[in-house]
Image 1: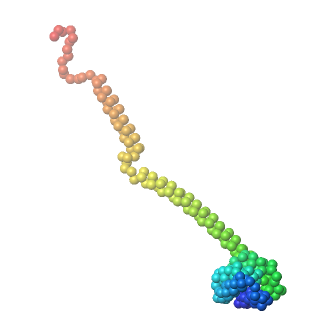
Image 2: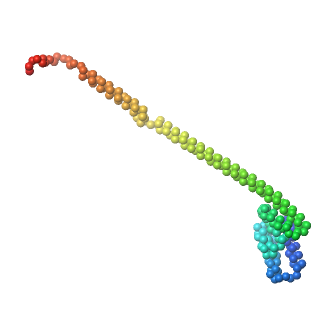
Image 3: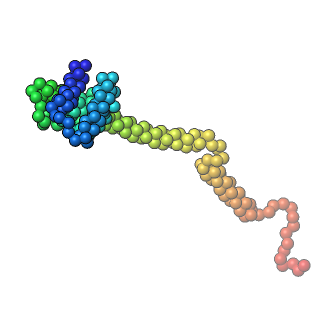
Length: 218
């Protein structure tokens, strides 16, 4: 709450000083000041209600309408509240480059150091999270590779089991060794029949049939 009040005081004081110190100037400048004041008041309300993005846009447009250096501090405050610490550092430093009195400089320097600490912590967290994410991705890739290898191995084992099952379940007459043995039996039987047949032809006929004398004429 204190830094919000101080942020508003910085620019409010400048508006008051510019209005009281200078007599009436060109109309264009007066119009720019009026526009900047209106934008500033709306941004101040947004900042107080925690609408920091809207406040940032309002302060930025007010600065464009009338580039008061002190407005840079308020823009830095909005970036700090939005956790955009790198941008907050930029605007605090921009503000400190101007002609700033001691009290406001001390406040800006304090906020600048807080922004730098917050930025360093955020960067450390970001790098740690990135490292953890890379590690998770590497672990996931290794797990995926291992799962793939296991699936390939399982497929090979399943194919081997299927072949063994088919060989075991096949009928005897479908097995190669059955037909090899059958062919051997047939070959042995055929050989035995041939040999037996040839042996019968060499024997002389027996019985009481008369013989024929080749010298007697028929």
